[in-house]
Length: 238
Length: 238
Image (cartoon, rainbow over all chains, first blue to last red; front, side, top):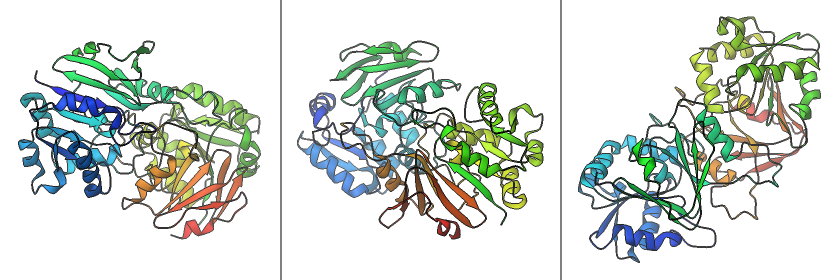
């Protein structure tokens, strides 16, 4: 399988600028062969402004950016893409727009069959997995399904957050939410990617990158912590 | 309109037991005429345990509790109910179960036409509004619609939370999430009910109760704070 993915937890890390914490990972990932990246800004309301932000940042690495919404035919834009980057924002809006524009199947085909590199951050990481059932976002619009692009056979919870032991707020912790997910007959594995971490997938090999640990939640098992550099390829064999 | 609603932000307040912070409001609301309350435990996985919790607590106020899942015909149970209480948990699971059991329309009819008192807490408050588009919960299951029971013509965000200015976490604040909701052509008003607050609706009169303020978000306007005791009846006239 030619699959190449860079699935980033968060677009911006506290104290830094947009994508600054993973610029070298992006550069390593797209490499020197990629010249143009197709950017998908569907997760934010202002697609032009969002594309300009991504364009300005990726230009510093030497990549040109095309906004998928600038193309007259988005499916054709995916068909011709050298590389794809789906940015963060609201996951429900993003997935609904991917379906509305009929690009879900074509993105899957290009990535899994043609080996087009796929980068996602936050919501763009959620939609790369089995489903958006483990997003943190508010369900501001109703997508035709929660099934996502399905580039990996597990779920991810981006911006994974440890419980705040000083909090007096009674809303569920992130762990309690994932436990509720596991009470339903859904995907058994959920990888909690803390801010600062990302997953690199190359074919059937998966490696945790970044500066923070990740926590894996598997139905019926105790959760497990993984350090940056860990080999998580076993997640791809389900 | 006979409508009578008690819409509570949260089932448990920090430092107290289940429903303790609003027991006197519940007693005032159901009053002396109600003998039995139909409890809807669909938002949690263990319906029997959840019903026992509600039953034990409401018994201290002199009310008997029937779990809707204990009835052979849930629609008939709604048809015969003297009072309805929908408890908190996961809003997506709750709404899906309400649709699966075909009780959405019957609950609406009983409350709006027959004047059956309706109490909701947390997820049970979300489903009383126009839609669940402003829930905080993880979308662990896919309901057939986000449209809810529609007992009031606006949305509520329960467990409303002010931004934590000390946080280094980069996930959206609650206010940012509601702003994203307002970027879509959805219900213009969202009432942010902080933990400790609740809304009492009697016919066309709405009053904020409890111990904390509420924040109203209206599309295209600055948000407004309301103190306990405020008359919010204007929200019912949209």
